[in-house]
Figure 1 (cartoon, one colour):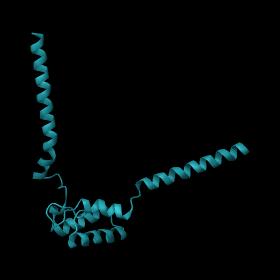
Figure 2 (cartoon, helix red, strand yellow):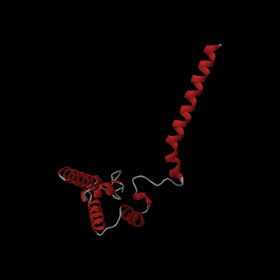
Figure 3 (cartoon, one colour):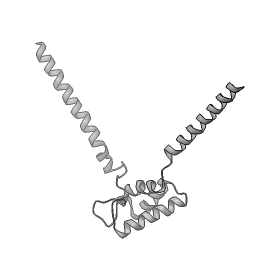
Figure 4 (spheres, helix red, strand yellow):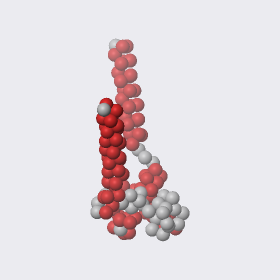
Length: 132
């Protein structure tokens, strides 16, 4: 019985510790969530600054709206959609990959692929010349 009790207590302790870690890993604080969301939105009155970086009154007001909406239970996507509906897609720090901006998202990938193909072709032709 002593061995069984020890194993049961160990298993219970392990499960409670594992669940505590699992829940706390994903639990961002309210301030972290506000910083995350405001970092994805550009300040409408500041040049090249996100809402998180800006000290403008409008940026402070936007952070307050984000906090209020988080406390109301709105998701990150719902809050971002709210600001996109109010200000348009120019409010987004990273434009969605469609239309012309899709080219901007694909350009680095295409550059790496083309550069890799050029390097492979150069190495292959160099090896062929060495064999002759």
